[in-house]
Length: 439
Ligand SMILES: Cc1cc2nc3c(=O)[nH]c(=O)nc-3n(C[C@H](O)[C@H](O)[C@H](O)COP(=O)(O)O)c2cc1C
Image (cartoon, rainbow, N blue to C red; front, side):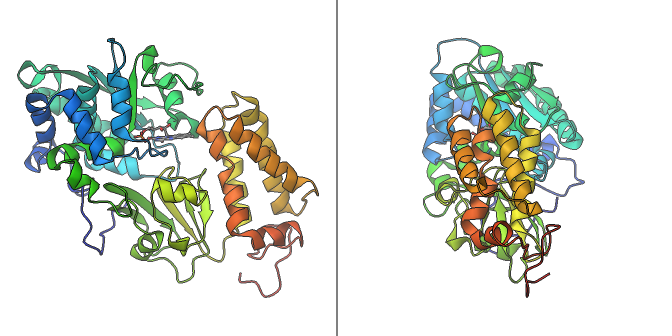
């Protein structure tokens, strides 16, 4: 996917070495631009605890969806009783509409691997994995070549870097749907077991891959770590806005002139991101975070794009995507589509997941087909509360987001469907188009 040039003077941490899509990201090119220098310095001059402390102080938070503090996760793993440990880079990129992680892995696999190596050093792991969706063939090939080059140059492998490093990295292509991006599901998939989530606690840092302490981090989270170790925690913390640290990748698509991926300071206002991608004059809504994300008003009511502000707005960081909808889109239709998708993708391990999401999707379908029942709103409220309370994994607990956020911010459009049997955008059939509505 196209990488957008920011118009602002924003720092480039993740895409600094991204190059062109067709350029092979060799070790030589990466090293010439500072690649692997942080790992070399860490294993010669810093203790594992010092690396973890730098990452913790930088304020780096996971970019895989939940925004968990990375340093805290590493510390939790490092503090486990001595045993084999693992680090898994989550490059599965479950959201079928997202291409951020894939782009990063294709353009700069060495940044992901160096971050993975630093994580392994910090927690004492000698075996690490990068999990990639089986359809991301270019990313997998380039990662594999990058591992091979790093081994040949004595950076990875057995007794690497003057005997200081023992680290084996395996690239694993994983098949499966949306739920496989969830960390416990991914771990089971790597073990060739049935891909379903586990109850937590224990968290993977305590009992993860093959029941051993395991750090699972998103590939973008890991790719930021070499920069943090090179420039220091304070420098990274200073890159964000509104109390957030660092930069992040965002993908903007839909009703925009230039869809693409852009690196912005974490916490950047939604309106600034829309301006960069050349949004249509009057966008109706943005879906932030992917299928289990939330529909927000495009003025963003000054929403900063960071996990905290999005949480306050009833949204999630999710996959880091921003999908812009114009006046031709129907939010009820889109919210129902997302709910149906999540129901289709749910693994069904628990009753709320197996039955609750199905009932939720049915309500959405009744809204769009003009057959709402008088009890639907109450049923929706009850289902959302129950599904969130009883959720085993975040697919269930966030599956309520599209409908709930749609009803919160686009109440009049839902009213039109449910009360008057009208679809203002003229999308839902066989509903009437409201008089005077834009089509
Ligand atoms: C349904 C679902 C799909 C997910 N998909 C991904 C994914 O594709 N990539 C990812 O890194 N995290 C994904 N996550 C989040 C992971 O469970 C986990 O929190 C993350 O990999 C941890 O890395 P981080 O701390 O660096 O964010 C998903 C979670 C859920 C519930």
